[in-house]
Image (cartoon, rainbow, N blue to C red; front, side, top):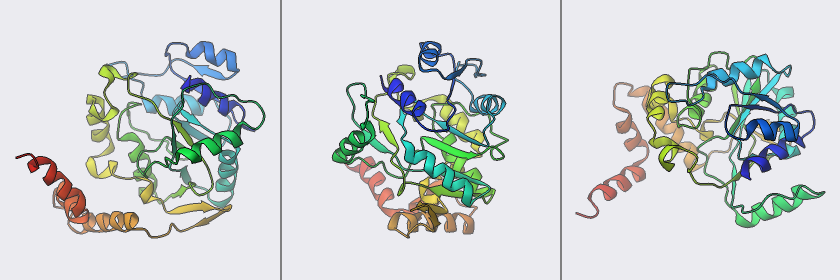
Amino acid sequence: MIQRNAIKSWTLLPDVDVILLGEEEGLAEVAKELGVKHIPNVVRNGAGVPLISSMFQLARENSNSELLCIINADMILMPDFVEAARRSCMLRDEYVLLSQRWDYDITSPIDFAEGWQSRLREDVRKQDQLHRPAGSDFFLFPKSCYNDIPDFTIGRAGWDNWMIYKARKENWAVIDCTPSVMIVHQNHDYSHLPGGKPHYEHPETNENIRLAGGQANIRYTILDSTHQLVDGKLSRPKMTSLRFTRKLELFLRALFFFLPEDTIENIARPKRWKKRIKKIFGNR
């Protein structure tokens, strides 16, 4: 139900070409039903988990668009997303567009009758669950970017953080469109993953971290954005306590590059360190 809601919302967007990647059960049938492309032959690792490098390659080979977007199949999009994409490509040549998501508890299929966007926005705002600026569920970028994706596995931790790290390393604009776009994430459990465990508890996550170049490169989040899209214009993000802490962490990491990762994090984020100490010793 969640995936049908998401994919249906994509098909209603103007000037968008939807491509579903993979061989999961029911995917071919829903692609045919909704009239979208389906490419099944995604390369997988030894455990059968699809590789993002293969997904990117297949998208490039099967799309004529100058913009590409990888997005999880639980995300509902509305026309403001397309407008943000259009505006971004007018303002920058090399960039990645991302945003915080709005988490939404849903129990029934969305009625896509006229006015569905307004009804959905109202319901989402009532629940008021703007996700913290960590964990990115989509990346939109020009076709010229991200030509050298490592063999990350999809649905495991780390690869999304690397996408932001890569953009910052290449001096591309990292554009946070949270002020301009409502991206809706339909809440779910992890029953679709082996053992019902969250993605960060699987061995492929460790391999993703290794391919990303280590822990430091997977700490990048929306807090590392260089710009925000506000009213159709790019501006520098306002300095918040979270952004200040993140900038301090990056400064200390560059200055004391010889220290372990956790040491830098404990210095930059003492509250988090205190919580860890309390968790370890609290019941003793």
